[in-house]
Every structure is written in structure tokens, then in C-alpha cells.
Length: 129
Image 1 (cartoon, rainbow, N blue to C red):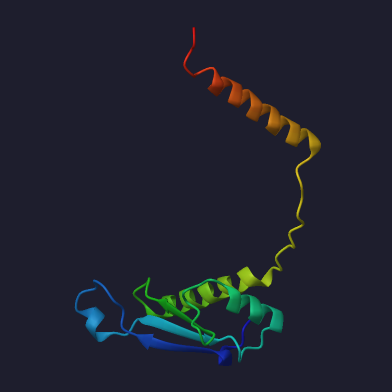
Image 2 (image 1 turned 90 degrees about the vertical axis):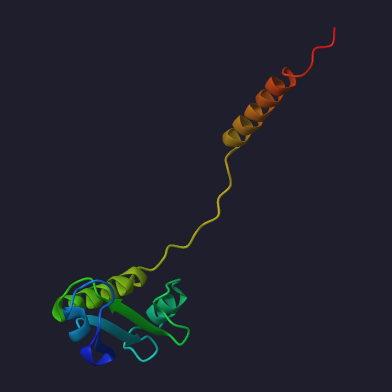
């Protein structure tokens, strides 16, 4: 879906526990995807930039760090899959909301329940003999 030349992938060292191997091997992946320079449609770019996601920087760069697995290949595939999921989320055009009003029956039911509740509360007051 996205050309390989638009995605930049670099190997980084993973964080957390992993023994001696974690200090020697760069198995984690940092994926960078520039939204403005991509071949996506203008509408999709706009929706991607409007997404409230901490992985999108203010400059319009998507940064995905993948270190779930111990191998570079699996982490690379995981990062690409997460980018694809992000793009799939904005691919679908959101439906326009049509404002509606409650019907006459709903309004009368609401008002009737309010008056009934008010009468019930009024009966809880002090009784004056």
C-alpha cells in the first residue's frame, strides 16, 4: 500500500530486560513516515494529521518504535503492521452527524417522569399536623 522508499526504518537497541544480548544487538525498530511527503491523498493526509495520536509529531512525522519481539525482522513487521493499521483507521471517511430532536412522545414521557419524581420528593417532607 505504501511504497518502501517513503518509509525509513532504523535499528535501535531495545529497552528492558534481555540479559547480555540486549547490550550487543540492535533488535528494536524505529520507523519514520513523513505524512506530507507521502503519496497518500490530500484528504487522508489531513485526517492523519488530525489524529490525536502521540506517535505523530508536530512536524507531521509518524514515529513508531517496535521492540515487542527479540528479532529485528519480527519487530520490523510489527512496526509496518502498526503503520498500516493507523492508515486503515483514517481511510474510512467519517459519517456526517445529522442533528436530531427528541419526538413529542419522548418529551411528554420525560416531563411526566419529572413531575412524578417531584411529587415523590415532596411527600418526603415534614408533615404539618
